[in-house]
Amino acid sequence: MDEAAEHYRRAFELMPDSFGRVESHCFGCEHVFAGEKSQGVAEKVFTQMLAVRPDKPQLHYLMGYLREEQERMPEAAEHFRKAVGLDPLYLNAWNRLAGIEEKLNFTPVQRDDLLLKLVALDPTRRHVSPDLVRVSDLPRLWQVMHEAEQTVAALPQTGEVWALPASAAQLSQSQDRSTAWDFESAKHDAATVLLEHKFVDALQSYLAGINSHDGDN
Image 1 (cartoon, one colour):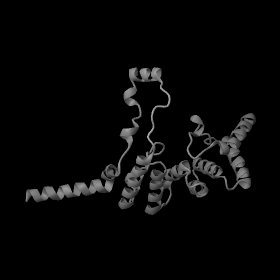
Image 2: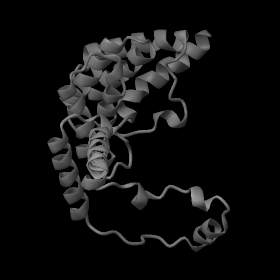
Image 3: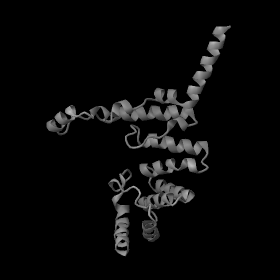
Image 4: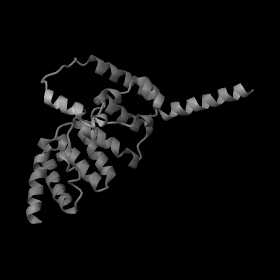
């Protein structure tokens, strides 16, 4: 265990300079802070590093991630907020903060800020999938979605960089190709998002009920 702790220590020391604004945590070791031993090592490493580099957003992000694993949600939120305060474009920190929102007493405005910030940072929703039906400010939701559409439309068009005929042939023969991620179909415009919102859905049901009642009369 002592030898394992040393490897944990070195891995944790390397993390802050290895992480970017968007990353896949160690390619499958997302719960690296789940064990008591690793948590103890991470606590010591990140506390020491924060004392030297308090302006490093990745350190606050990692400490927030650790606190989340420890079920210390208010402290996790505080560190995630510090991370995005230091780097407002830190998508993963915004996403982690949004992920613990339901466990804390966030106001509707704070919740809207989080969810709509994710749309602004990732307008194609390639990396995050905010639950937009929980947004309470519908005019603001419409505006942010409209701006996201404009951002995507302004992106330069891309073409093939390298042709991979063998891979394309293999994909066309795959029995699982129907389950492949279809990025285009996953995108939603502002109107679609509003129509999927629970308030709009309830309003439509209410109006349909009124129309049905008027028809009976």
